[in-house]
Amino acid sequence: MYMKILMIGDVVGSPGRRILKEQLPRIRREFGVAAVVVNAENAAAGSGITVALAQEITAAGADAITLGDHTWSQKEFAPTIGQLTNTVRPANYPLGAPGKGWALITTPICRFAVLNLVGRTFMNPADCPFRAADAALNEMPKDVPVFVDFHAEATSEKITLAHYLDGRVTAVVGTHTHVQTSDALVLPGGTAFQTDLGMTGPWYSSIGREFAPVQQKFLTGVPARFSVAEGPATLEGAVITFDPATKKASAIEAYRYREPLA
Image 1 (tube, rainbow, N blue to C red):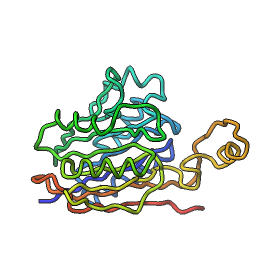
Image 2: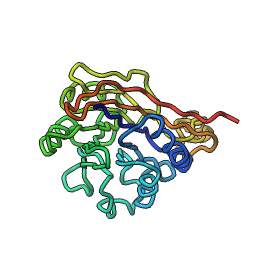
Image 3: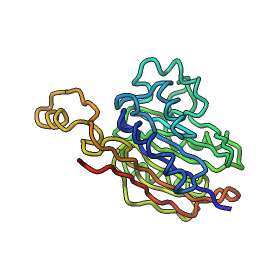
């Protein structure tokens, strides 16, 4: 018996949360997915997340939430992340960081593990994601499929980690760049991979932000506040088909729903 899990790219601000709430119930029905994993590290006005927003995203249909380099951007989140049993921050954050890097998720249909990692190339300092993945896999039950969200900038780092984990996890998908890639495939060992899931947020924008301040920063080099754009939104991710018995993926299909530009 095969199952499907939907993994969704970075939710950006209120437009991303809105389209997630509006479209996720339909997408779950349409694809018959057993569970949904959502990257939500940009959910709070484009930078970070709060407990209330994590609960809102869970109520919208997310079974698990992953984060990234903006995990601690909302100052009240670090002391409260422990309240969220379905939310993971990067496992390669330094020892002693609050929260957890992986979690077991149980739904009425399936049980699986979700692991979050952050890249080191062109990113803030972090521990080695390769060794952190090894350590997390050693801690996990061996009978559950494992879905990895690698929140990283460099395509080479994402591709290399996926091949490093091929055959040991069910899927490795990238987040962070907000640009969906067209390279979804199943690797020889049975691990589904896509370099980047894309973004869930305002698509007529500079990766979710208003054009004007971003253009001004490129033109002058002067820092500016990058506000979340308004307007039509997109929901992007991938549907992964796998065998719960073998924990191997058989297919991965990129997904995009985009509202029209008025």
